[in-house]
Amino acid sequence: MIAIQISQLTKKFGATTALSGVDLDITAGELFALLGPSGGGKTTLLRSLAGFHLPDAGRIFFDGEDVTRLAPHKRGTGMVFQNYALWPHLTVAENVAFGLEERRVPRGEIEKRVAQALATVRMEAFAGRRPGGLSGGQQQRVALARALVVRPRCLLLDEPLSNLDASLRLELRAEIRRVCKEFKLTTVYVTHDQKDALAVSDRLAILDGGRVLQAGAPRDVYRRPASRAAASFIGEADFIPAKIISAGAARATVESAVGRFEGVPGRGVAGLAAGASAILLIRPACWRLGREAVAGWNHVCGRIGPAVYLGETVQYDFVVGNVALKITELNPRFAENEELVASVAPDDVIVLAE
Image (cartoon, rainbow, N blue to C red; front, top):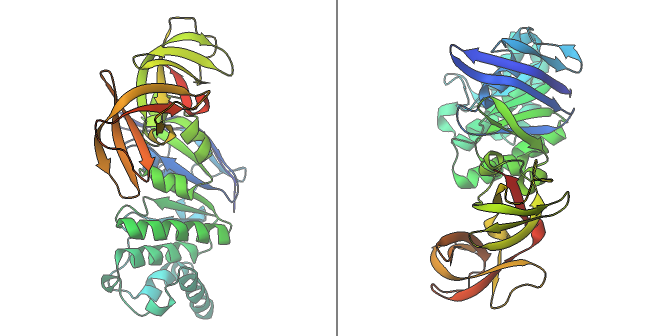
């Protein structure tokens, strides 16, 4: 496993800037996710780490070694592609062995390492089959085994679960994390799916427009987004226009279209003057519905509007005047048009600079 340092990395394709001065540090053995919209720069950054793209500026270091212009086959990375990229005419075992044969590893060693890699991803029973006879999830496991068998210094995963159905995604998420931790691999995982990023990673970075909007532990980025743009890419939220009443280092008080709120000041909010524009960010799951307000919490009075039933949860439109707030509840128990009080703790209200 290696530590990765990315310093001021810039990459252009014609007039389009795919990466713009990206700085990131990835710790040895860390599972690091790159999250963001299509065209945000995630895959360009991953392919730059692999050596498939040469940057226009900036540098990449593996354990302090400058690999910016090192050929891909000399970097010691293993890559799993979105479309699996398996050879259809080769068996599972032959696909996994391909990289070792290219490295001229002795036949006995190849057989041993292929068997170990297939056992790691629980595909040893399928060694003699061809990819066309496998499910999407099985093909993804083979692609992972092929990357692992060469014993890479780091593992690069490009949207590895995007072609799988919901149940397989859950299974493979856990499997990928298990394998990466078992091998103590530094792993960079590209995804546009926020749940994949939250579930798999030790830390993550949100990229948009070729820039890093925010990086940190999943819980920190989710609960304390640095900007509206960052919050939009990681979970649902209501964004409510507001005006600053007071803004200190630990607490900010604002007036909004649905009432006065006390919350946690986001980046750049502390010290804003009274009357300055701001945005309230509240996650749907942070609200608590009831007949009475929770003592010490922010609260608003309203009525239940249209609801989306999701089985174990329901998401209500909670109508407060002309504003409909999104509120998610476990074990749904309220009916449309019921008049209630919605409460939210100050620590779950983020005040962002506009």
